[in-house]
Length: 194
Length: 326
Image 1 (cartoon, rainbow over the protein chains, first blue to last red):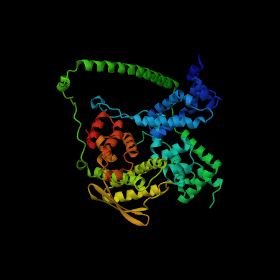
Image 2: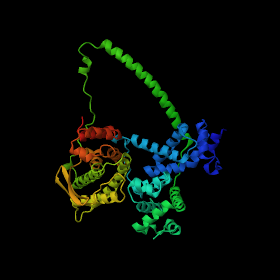
Image 3: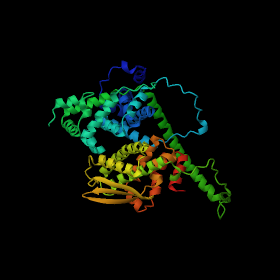
Image 4: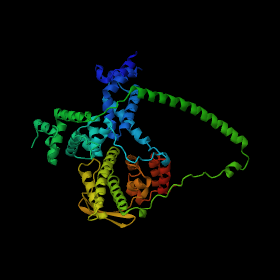
């Protein structure tokens, strides 16, 4: 069994943390090995899904975009400069994937006749996926608040830089950021409650 | 009063008292955070923790990435083959046409039946067909959008970098103010007056806009004192710029650039509308008040370029009708 296959069969929680730095893994990826990609996915996958969830609030799109980002990382590994930090490059690639997706996205067209008749009584959905819960939590935030979270966490900007980017005062950015964090802390509403 | 690290760290605690901070205090905290790496680090951790708590169950998978890689490989191979085939067909077609076309043109092209349109595309609604509420929202949003662009591109000359930032920021502000407009119009007792709603909305937008100015955006009106539609095709804003009050008269925004109208006419859902807004806002909307006044003939074509790629074929046909394009 190859290292790649092992990586896919061992559950993530049972894996030992890989001691190699992201930049070292990218150097290996540049030389044509694809095993390091799995390590990067384990390390950054969830954060990347959250990045896209924050932007799109669409759980399915978030996962597809995360996969596409890793594919780009893999196919564009040669453009990575090993002396530079991985994280900013990684999120630049993610941002480009996001922009390209926005440009090419079109609403699917479904002929009216092909739509199923609505049921008499809709049974409540038995369970809500984790991403849908996350999307609901993010619905509580305004566009500006989500943008502030993205700029702060993924682009690592200081409050005054975010303020300049969004045309707010640094104090307003701080207040909005703090309020957003509090809103995310509030317990999710039970979808079955009336 | 100067803030110490201990004060700021207390405020950074979950459910700390940051929510009740005055504006002045919030500015002090922000300044401290930008100066103090340790406190800033704490804030970063707090943000990271909050985001890490967002539940995520589906992870990106190597299998999915490999599928994408295979698709990409297949696509590039097919593209190469298609390119070769197209070149061959073009050569053969040209040869065939040269050999078989009689002088005076092809009879087949004259006899060709007109294409059959299976379902007629309905006419986009006239404003008078819409409810009073919809009409009011459409007029109000159009006025706010146009005025925000006036502030950026007509009385200022920002650098390219600032322009991009200002566009992003002004669209976010527009969306925020739009929410307030809609909630105003939702009130029925007493029914709101459109001019008053727009006046408040414009002042709201201006307030947010001027809370932190960009370096190359030097002129912003300090207050708007009056708003009216003197004719159905124009709007008037009285605003204080410098120490003087000025009356600005602008043509109203055309239907094909009015987001609220497009939402109704195209049946656009929220994500589609957001994409249309972003596309138009960063292209046709730039300097729009001046272009409208100059009756710039490229507005229609540029709008089509910006919007059509986002739409389904049926919506494209409707949008062409709204623009008045063939």
